[in-house]
Image 1 (cartoon, rainbow, N blue to C red):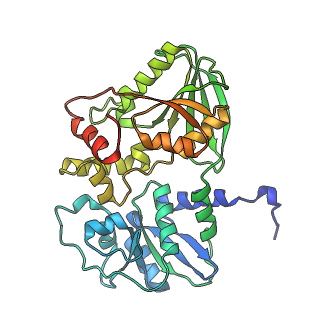
Image 2: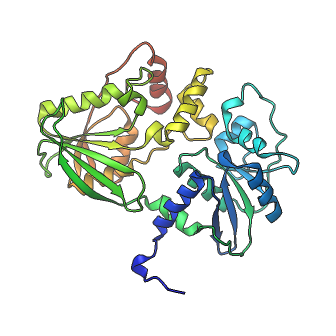
Length: 363
């Protein structure tokens, strides 16, 4: 057997990225810690044949977030999550129905559910975090493996997962080039790549902003429906264009375009949330029914990209105080919050009202 030198071996963050990819594709991942381990599958992808295989290995359990547990009216004894017994008689459809709220109103009587109280929930919590990172529903199926090694399945440790989410990602400026924009002619685009090969994020640098003075800045989360399609359900597209126009007029600025679609839950889950909004739920309620927090974005990314570009003081274009607080906590001083009130229309009035009432946006 050939032993790879350390320089060619994947680092812990690389293994997390591979685990996320495997879960997204419907493959199992092995989570381990000093006391044992568990084989994990994403709940939304599980097939009957996979469930049968897990039952041959032991007693599978379903892990759901506390928000999803609230919708299902199940007590979350582990605080931020619930562990459910998967009855021997049910199929994979029972699992996906518990995880996915698409049919909640059509089939309100689910269960019965039996919460598991004994034992630890650390591996279950890590599994939910990995599913979120994969932009899947925050729900996972686990079966205990003890200390056994699992052949042909990627293993990541609980410590690696915890460190990954605590520390966040590092980035490198892969390339930048001039891109004249309609609203800001003197512009260049920087492409930042996560060190583990994850999502890329972009910085549009307008003019030649001084590094020793506050720079006009916008942290803009990607919105396919608003930025590209011109959706009237949100104000994202108008905010993007207004920010670029303001920077173009001023002659300098930085717009960070962060690939955190749907407040960080991904486009597929965002469309699930939209479908729930069509049933009468507001933005926050829809996210909760899916099992997510109000906002799953990681604003540390924006701070790190600004610091990579050489900026540590900004005039931040936002209506969201949480962005200001996060920049400050990450070492980026916000000397001014610049209001960005554009894009209001009859179709997004309720959406903006929820932003103000439940998310604290200053509208």
